[in-house]
Length: 162
Image (cartoon, rainbow, N blue to C red; front, top):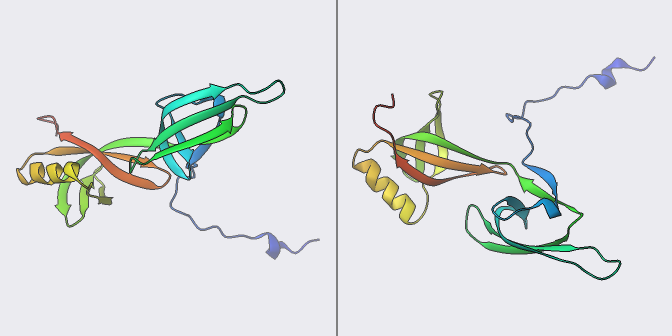
């Protein structure tokens, strides 16, 4: 009989739900406004076209997308029958509790604190800090994809929401 010690394994919890960061999708099923991974970054498809090639060739899909976090533009081409990676994108709203240095202190619906999201750069971040300093209660929208999180917008919380 085989030694049982070789079959005993200990697994450490990674602190992850186990959900994949991406899933495969046939290139021809991509749509304008959908998401796709381009050059290793999660992007939103802003333009696409299909070109039919010669007698025995495959149709190719040309698509252009913008990075959902930094706005950089990417272009790619793939045969329509091949699979491309599509990022799992989630959008959540959190109550803004505090603005400390470069980070936002947010509270989830369950009352847990989240303090690892950076203040957005530029005008959005400046306006958010200014309105929070004026004493307004704000809801911040966080976009999450492929392990990256960023505050993309905010709005004033509805009155009497407690």
